[in-house]
Image (cartoon, rainbow, N blue to C red; front, side, top):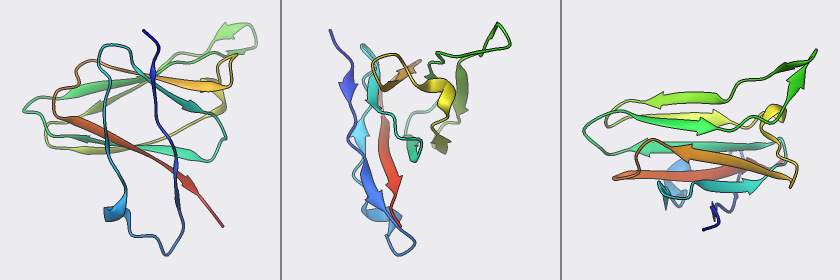
Length: 113
């Protein structure tokens, strides 16, 4: 099945982060979103153990493959993961995979000025 797409929510210096809509992580298919270079993923892990979030890389530098970005989110923890240019896939998306998704939610934000 295709990845579940996250839609970015605009935020600015005056935006309350508590109002961000959190989506259920798709542990089976993974998630994706359009790359802009200005988006950040907020991950909340409500589970009793850590979860690993993997942002898939699609880059090479000086002939070497850039590794995936792997972030461990502690039990009951929150993580902030900015998208980097290495995550841009050939179809214009960023791909995100989860080691587990039970009790894990995420919100995609994009800075507005």
